[in-house]
Image (cartoon, rainbow, N blue to C red):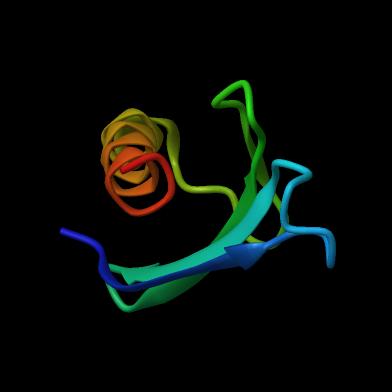
Length: 69
């Protein structure tokens, strides 16, 4: 399970979609950019493929809850 999930708008003009996000998973910090299309662009460390699918799903759920509520 990921923890300490944070996100903030990618642009000063908050009407332009795109968000930076970060979180911890298995004692490792990960960060990336969440695009309006749902595409995730990892900016620091990329998770291993086994974890990547799970994390991508969790990030989508969190972003839908926080941004598109």
